[in-house]
Amino acid sequence: MTTGVVVEELSIRARTGAELLVPTSFRVEPGTITAITGPSGAGKTTLMRAVLGHLAAGTIRVSGSVHISGQDIFALDRAALQTFRREHLAYVGQDPGAALNPAMRIRALLAEAAGRSAPAEPAAALERVGLPQHMLRSRPGELSGGEQRRVALASALVRGVAVLVVDEPLAGLHEQLRNDIAALLRSLAAEEKVAVLVSGHDTATLHRLADEVICLGEPRAALLSRLPATAVPGPVVDEVALRAEAIAARAGSRLLLESVDLTVGAGESVAVVGPSGAGKTTMARVLAGLHPQASGRLEVNGRRLGVGAARRSRRDRRRIQLIPQNPLSTLNPKHTVLQTLSRPLRLSGTRSREVAGRAAALLQQVELDPATLHRYPDELSGGQRQRVAIARALAAAPEVLICDEITSALDADTAAAIMGVIDRTRADRGISVLVISHDMSVVAGHCHRIFVLAGGRVVEAGDTAAVLAEPSTPQTRALLA
Image (cartoon, rainbow, N blue to C red):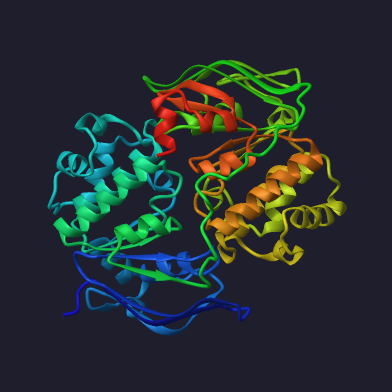
């Protein structure tokens, strides 16, 4: 029987006729890693889904086949496919935290994944992915993004599957953690004899990691340089648009942020950087009013906003808008783009008869064809979904825009285009922007000032060019390694 993964001349199109995946063939043997890369929209996610036996609504398999451990995936009915996947396949998505039940402790999550016949105990599986056993008592919300990825990999180990499909495992991680996750995947393949299929945009790391790299779509002309030769000049800041003082946050008994002070000037772009688990996303959620266990003082253009459990009025909720790292997790798959944009437009006072026109104008502002209004999220590429998320945030007429790793899952060209949209929007509307990123080229090219978080505290801050040229702390130097 053929083991591992065999994809032969697989081709997928949308019902509209658009080609989503050109005929593609490859093989992933047990104990090896195959990486799928290419620009946004080239078909990486479409291919990863197909390996799982899933075709998105509105798509058609034109030709080809996918065999897992000798089984033709597309020959199985829904019930048989679910059983087969449970026994042979494990999938770790771009946002592994979204697949972890927030109410369950890690021990229970791993025990549930293992079922009755588990080749590995939860504690052993957790240790295998480099996490301490005391985390068995934690809940997903108490873990960093990198820790959640490791837990998702541990859940595959306790099931003893033969094939592991990992979508964008390196996205949104700092350099050291990217290397750690890559090394972990390498060891899982070699020592557990698992066939690993991985996707991503970090071509340098993927080539070091994988036995074979499949590039979909047109190759990129060149990678972005690690740091641009010149940093973006700062605007003349006369007023502070966002002022946060003594911000603290917890998840249960775990302290995530401690006495953080941060300011963003009117029309300014400010970066928040730091290693995974430093508290960056928690800070974004506190500012957006989404983290209840928080305290401190927050002002936007002189108006005091509630922090933590303190309620905000509808207008105050609109003042700060958060664009998430993975827009697919926050876009309703059953709503068209028009339906997605309609709600914030109506809440901001747009009349019903004007909603469609305003929505089309928003799409043009983020450089999307107005025809996209009638498409669903799974019909869009990662870059297109990110632009829709930006348009949705702008529909609320915010005064401050928080961008949480919005380029981490995009190829370099698409990431540059997305940041160009943010820059033009900031200049045209006078919006203040807070950028959370691990990509120092993004930070250096688009942010005027920088705050470095580590262990829930600000350890360094200042002009971006000055800090990156002569970092004064080991945490900042590690980010530039």
